[in-house]
Length: 334
Image 1 (cartoon, rainbow, N blue to C red):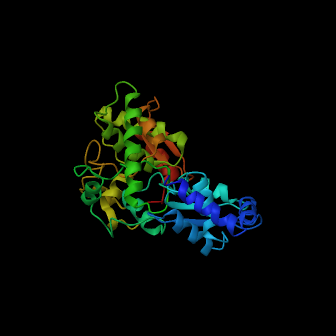
Image 2: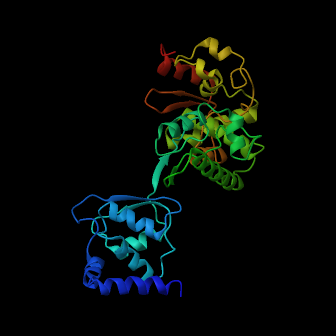
């Protein structure tokens, strides 16, 4: 009876006022002209059918609020309005608009986490994006970030999977971080379960650390398993990893783009020229391909590699071969 009464009152009013023909014409008329650009409609939380109908009239999309209200009552959807931001395409008609705002199919925005970013670069990117609410404030500590995500004892570096994430209006950086964290945890567990046998890695987290190093060493997808193979063999032999990206990470804001011999000797927890084994945390956000490469490294004998200067690397089995390659490709560069 509560639903039928508004319908009867609306219908009676329309008939009594001679507006029934106007209502039928309204059902078939496009609200957004065919040649116009799409219109964004923001439905605030708590918006009622009456409030939405008045807003549509105020925007010039509906000639009278009761016209749109009548459709909703007749279709028993008066209380089904869902908050969110909706895109109204050219040619959309009133029944289609009602279906849209009761569907919850809101506008989706995209945010991409880039492979090789640090978590600080990720936070800087979300802070620059005006579509994303900033709840963490400026320069939050690592512990504050992970506490807000419900993992206070974990370090944030490497924990967020590089990928494109879609979000709706009102999302915060914590929403994106939470999804990226959960996706990384799932991917890491899946890849770890299918890892090669006899790897010198004791846990998925160690795989994540090594994958972050591989991610920073090369941008070529084809080289990731090969570089991973070099590092895996070094770990098995007890050799130091001696990888520049870990040194740079350990220098933090002090690194000005010029890596010196003094830097290679500086004792930070991340300096793999000084310390054996893996650094204490990842040094970047590795993608799935880098994780896969670490857990399925390329077989071979190479223990060294050097950048050729074109994005690729020269791999060598012996130190003598490596020194020769360094002279060829790196002479005068560092």
